[in-house]
Image (cartoon, rainbow, N blue to C red; front, top):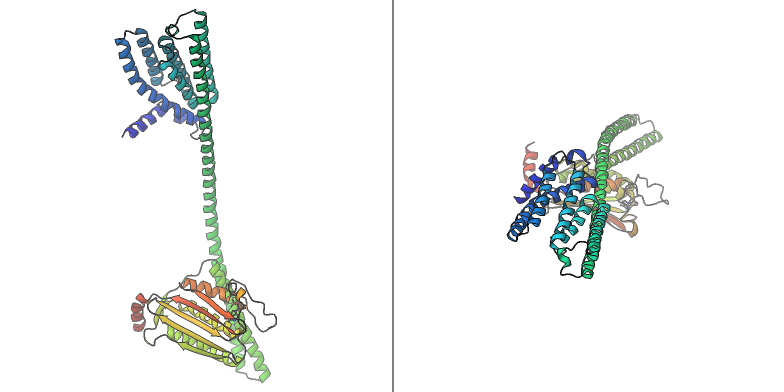
Length: 471
Ligand code: ADP
C-alpha cells in the first residue's frame, strides 16, 4: 500500500515537473532526473518531519537562529517543490544551493559535529547521483572552500565561532580535511556505480533492440519459408504426376506389346522395358517421398487394416522375384489369425517392409535364403518385423551410416547392385512417423537381420476392428 502510494505520488510529480514529456526515456539524463525527483520528494516529506522535531527542540532551548535557519530552508524547499514553471535543472541547482546554505549555517551555529557536516556529505552523494561526477566534485570543492574559509577566519580570529571556544584549531583542521577526503571518496564510489549501471542499461537496451530485430527477421523468414513450402508442395505434386503419368503410359504399352509375342528376343526387350520402367518408377517415388519427408509434408494417415493379410500380400509379391533369383523366401507369421486388425498407416508400413525385403533380395546371392518374421505384442501395442537374409552382410563400422540419406556401401565389384541410397533413410523416417524404431545386426559374408517396429493403438483397435468388420 505504501509502495502504491509512493508510485502514484512519484508519477504525479514526474508529470507535474514535465519530465516524461521532455527527455528520452532510456537516456542517462532521464535516469538522473528520475533519481532527483525521488530524492527530492523524500527530502520534502522526511525533511518536514525532521524540521518539526528540530524546530520544537530549538524553541525549547531558545535557539531562535536555528529555528530561523531551519524554517527558511524548509520554505525554500516547498517553494521549489510546488513551482510548476521551474525546470528540473533549476530545481536541482536551487535544491543544492538550499542544502549548502542550510549545512553552512548549521555548522557555523552549532559546530562541525552538528547535522551540517552530515548534510554536506549527503549533498555530495545526491549531486553525484542526479547531476554526475563533475557536479559531485564541484560540490566537494565548494565544501572544501567553505571549510578553508572557516579555518582562515578562525586562525586569524576575525570572527569567533561557537566551536572555536572549546576545540583547538588543529583538531578542526583534521576533521575538515577528513570530511573532504571522505566526500571525495563517496563521489567517486557513487559515480563509478552509476557508470556501471548505465553501461549495463545501455547493453540491455542494445540487446533488446537486437532481439526485436532478430525476432522480426525470424517472422519474415518464417513467412518466406511457409510460402516456399507451399511452392515446394505444388512442385512435388506436379513432378510426381508429370513423371509418373508418361511412365505408366510406357509400362502400359509394354504390357500390350507382350500380347504380340513375336519371338523370344522381342519378349526379352519388352521385359527389359518393363523392368527398367518399374525401377525408374521406384526411384522417382523414393526421391519424391524423401523430398516430402525433408520438407515435413508427410504425416501418418492412421486407419485400421488387417496386418496379417498385408504381410502375406507383400511376401507373395516378392515370391516370383525371389524364385527367379534362386533365393528362398519364407514367412514366419506369429500374428494370430484372430485379433489381427491394427491401427496404423498401411501405406508407410508396406513401404518399409517392401524396402527391407527388396534389399535382402538385392544383397543375397543365389541359393541364399530370406526369412520374414512378424510378431504382434498386445501388451506393448507394438508389432515387430524382421527380415533375415544370408546375404553379403555389412561391416560393423558401416552399420550406423546405412540409414543416412544417399549413403551407399561401395560394392564396386558387383555391377548388378544399383540403388539411390535412400531406401533405408525413408524406412527409418517412416518407422519414426509410426512411433516405432528400426535397426540392423549383420555379419559380413554371413547375413543381416533388419528389424523395425510400429506402434499400434490397440485400445482403439477393438473399436477399429468392429468398424472394419462392419464395412
Ligand atoms: P540402396 O539399397 O538403394 O543403395 P538403401 O538405403 O536401401 O539404399 O541401403 C543403403 C546401403 O545399405 C546399401 O547401399 C547397402 O550397401 C546396405 N544394405 C542395405 N540392406 C542390406 C542388406 N540386406 N545386406 C547388405 N547390405 C545392405
